[in-house]
Amino acid sequence: MQLSTIIFAFFLSVTGLIVYGNTVITPESIDTLVIAPHPDDAELGAGRMIMNEVTSGKNVAILVLTNGDAKEFGNYKISRDYGATRKAEQRLVADTIGVPSQQVIILNYPDGYLPRLENTLLTKSEYTGQMRSDLDSYSPGSLYTRSRLLYLMDRTITELNPKKIYVTSNKDKHADHSAAYELLEAVYKNNESISARVYTYQIHGRKFTGAINSDDEKREILELYKSQFHTPEYHDFMLKYANFPEDFTEVFFRKGDEFEN
Ligand SMILES: [Zn+2]
Image (cartoon, rainbow, N blue to C red; front, side):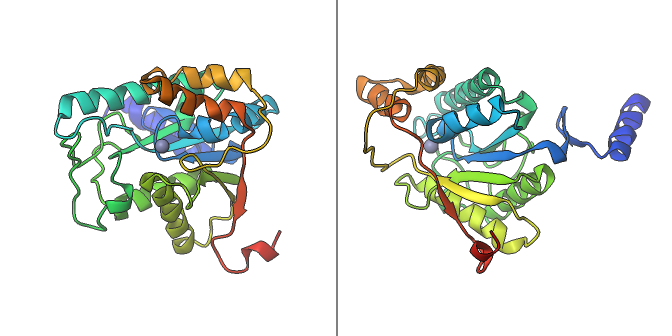
């Protein structure tokens, strides 16, 4: 280790800043953390909310659990390239809506496997052939186990110390999405010191009811996820989220939490 690195690390430890790979976050400053199973979920379900928070001076972070690499079973190259594209899209979108790149934390777990991760036994993604996270992930080389993912979620939430957390609903029809909810619930039950209020948003299986209320700014943001507009049907699916208001439900993971508010 070079002397300058040691001095820098010492400076960080003295000032209380946290190091995320090459980046630094002040933990006191995060108001809102949006947990997304895949790149694009945060903006589909909560893009308007994020933009409103940023406009009103709030500090938002996005925690993406997988890199969205479930493209072609057994075709590792195509699936890995697809995941890399989606992660790049996520970073571009976050930058566009005012979420600093160091506050986009991608854990790089395998797309399609969140509900199936074993506690300690390694899972191999049949899309990418990987059993651990990439070098560009928040915690490079993390093994694909449920216990490691829970640890990383706990660590991120503890360090960011957000006031509010948004996560996909347990009613969501995509198995990774309902699993994200259950993983967060497990983190809460294991760590009583986490006190952020939790709100859910639903992507798959959401009923779009009520009047159309087109949000052009949000539509333009969603269109930056170019890899997701494969077919006219998928295009319509994506744009529905810009045509109907966002919808959140507060949830309470611990008994008694609802009486404290
Ligand atoms: Zn998703």
